[in-house]
Length: 63
Image (tube, rainbow, N blue to C red):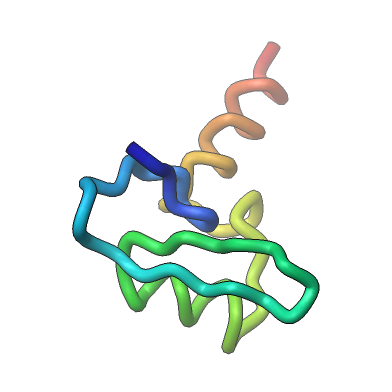
């Protein structure tokens, strides 16, 4: 199982989308919402409240 490059949610095999950039980097997305937030809107996952990266950073700051 792979994980979404934006929200870190597990992606079931046979679902989601894959983007291969010109530099060879491969990005996996669970939904078009994650794809658009990263590529079109240029958002960072750690600043978006519903992502796993945001929750992880917030949890570390509480310690």
